[in-house]
Amino acid sequence: MIVIFLFACFVVFCHLFGYILLLFVISKFKRIKNNKLRDIKPFPTITVLCPAYNEEEKIEEKIKS
Image (cartoon, rainbow, N blue to C red; front, side, top):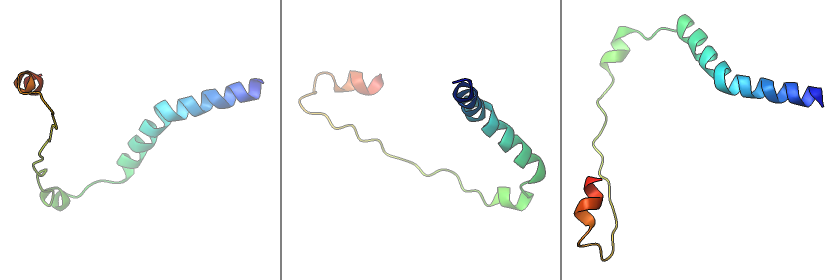
């Protein structure tokens, strides 16, 4: 029973902190070159569709919120 508890604690620890530590360690060894930063394009524009049926009176209020 104690082994299961310790394993569960280990899994939670790895989930919360291990991934962050892994990314930090990888970032120290691997650097992005400056020429790659210039190749990054801006994000494309997106359109959000909001389907509504019989909402003529309240649609403006819902969109603003």
